[in-house]
Image (cartoon, rainbow, N blue to C red; front, side, top):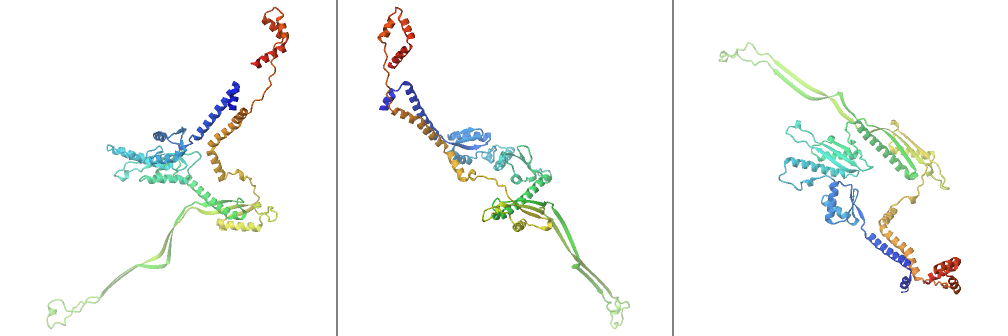
Length: 506
């Protein structure tokens, strides 16, 4: 009750200040509650085509889900993001700006064969574009297929062709393996499509698929293979020596000369000393002398005519043929030497001399010649050193210049989790902090000021006009106003005190 009475006794100005402070505190409390209860929006989809964005917004309106559109982003309350994504995915949304085989979900009996073939091509192009777009580095994709009509004459039949336009994400690129993967994906999805007839172009118009006979394309593949081999050798050396000299105390560089020449040769060897019978043919004819007998006719066959002999006996005939075929031993060998033969290896290994410390004082100590020789021998074994082909391995020991990076400045997983938790709960911390400051610097001093009784100030005695003053004013016959003005001019201090006493009295 005392506070109410004191508020009632306050001047109008102080009452206005108190009322403003109360209104400000209540408004801050209401705003804090609204801020805390406000839903946190999260990205549902980004970088959508206009068709997909319009379709998703229509679905959000049908489901009565609040949303925000910021540039190419669609945001919804965070507690509904994953559930809504699953629901839209079950309905085939987003479509990626391309129509797929859902084009045949609604068919008409009046559809002509031409329209059906055209829809099939559109659906196949859309499905391929969606599949290619799922690659991490690709933001947008379009596929164009040229499918010629099949004819009865094989000589007049044209081959199908395909063109792929990809838009890469900022700072991303496609490796040679990824490009070949896209080529084989498209060629395997279209009947009769040769991988040579697939062309891939990026958003800048650069052709990513080079012909196989292009020397530049082959050189790039060879360079990638050579670098991969050198990196593998360097990794082997570092992994071998780090347990000995310590992590980060060894550096290795390897240069390999690789022969990419493809050699194909055929050899035929004949051994004249070795003979093998492969076929043999023999023909023999023999005719002995003719049979003894009489002269042909009746006379020689009559009784008592047996002594009559033929005067011309037949002569002996003999014929013999023999054919033998021999084959000498012959060896035919076809040798293909694949490209990629290592012709020479040069390796340099640099050890940190400060890695080896004395046991007593911890001062840096360089590696001895014997230790360097042992390490060099280990490196030779690791890289497959062959002296006949001119391989070189050199091991050196030098002090490394260490870049001091404080561990506390390196964000660990625990620090990242704490930062993520703080950012997530900042909308709860800021209103509470604001209310706390408002209470400390506004409400609390105000309550304290109202609870303390105001000090009793002794009022100065009210001054009144003395008899002498009244007589001096009434002596003259001038008007009253002129007499008072004349008196104030003569006695300014007394006039000031008199006015102050009147004001305090009021």
